[in-house]
Image (cartoon, rainbow, N blue to C red; front, side):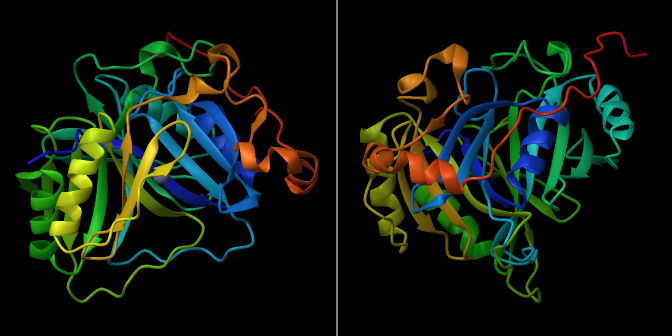
Length: 322
Ligand code: ZN
């Protein structure tokens, strides 16, 4: 069997684009690596936040749909986006978030130190302190000192009515293995497990189904090395009873979408070609990038999209927080 290699990106729905940008770049210190439009609804943005180079495994993306009602947390949805920060960084983050008016709550999970928080539109986030290096490019022009910057994803948390059903699918179609249990959460690891390769599930049999809306995860994408692996995993998804889309060219990666049996929308996405395929790596995210078939309508599209300004320089970088 061909297994996926962890989380590739996570896509969520936000409210106002500017508030979203201010929070993820100005507060969390991620880099806006791509400013594009929703390819299926080009009058809305698609914003991509990641490490400086947009490595797979670091990229949280948003469809800002301020006209949409808030989503409903429930079964069949990803309910939390987990990031990794360096070991010893949580005190810095608790202080930084507090100074910026963001409430955070410490917690211990699977023996790891975690800080829980929400973004301005209600999306649940967690920062987990993780030892050791990882594939990561620091954003030197960001507001967070390199030593404390978010390293990429840690885990995605799902609520499911039936653990067994989704566990079977994660194992059979994507190669995940059950690797731990803590406080009602079941931890599944891809590719041997580790930070960035976890999916954690809580079984909530009586829970109503969640609904998409602002502040809710839209889908979770998993890494495949290239198109050959993608087709192999796609076949496994089909054999496990799901209905994958054909391979869709998203320019920066190639994607296949499908729902797991509990209802969460998943995607598999190739590691390449990456975000610098259509933009200079030094200027990622600065101009609106359109797929070629929308390029003739650039003027009309730019006219309806809200103008985005870089976040106000709020708290200056501090490397010497006690
Ligand atoms: Zn996606």
